[in-house]
Image (tube, rainbow, N blue to C red):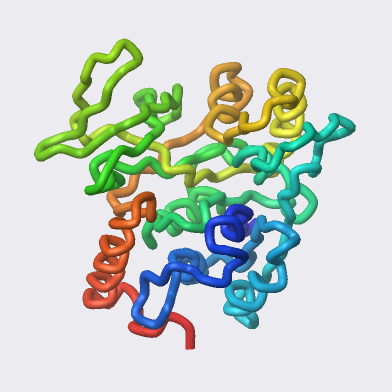
Length: 301
């Protein structure tokens, strides 16, 4: 069964004013999600599902989804604040989304096959899609396992400020043992440094395997997420800002030995636009890839 690509894009409307203005990184106004869709289609994905919000659906379909007409099957799921609360009352005044775990959960009615998850505004590299599709199509591992693309930390850091990264511990067979969120990592000349909870400065080599939320799941993840989201609501559902994150949900499944997650290494560079200065870095990266022939000058014709 061919896997689907699930793109989490529910936050795009708030970040980009309902999609009225979206920061281009390509020479003809292409944005990061354009390159993700292009890479996925080239890797053999034939179905792409978008998680969005109802209020910017029309603009999203027109500006982004329509580019796949005649190229790939598309479907839409909607991450609203009252989605999948199962009777739990929505806290008064809450306007913050429930997090990436919830964003995946809302797609349960439109996905019945293995699938890959990405963030809409992150660039992952063409090889990452190829190895994910190959693994989930049955060419590697147990077909009940999940998987995750593991990036090299040094290929994911910003030149302009602090970032948070999920540092992965793996066994000798490259199965995930745990993901530890490290905050305020900053790049220096030879490696990376961060300040731990005690205030002490710690050094990272830059070669650590990190998660950038490029996950591959079997459809049974939806039931796991539904149960965990209920537990999350019991504990945090009255709070204004707590979020149900997918790395934590996966970590609990691994720790309880309910699921295994295979780490698929890539040397692709990841980039996103965390700081305003990152936009120029992203534009430069795309231009170099165009010059190398990885992408055409005009992505969509």
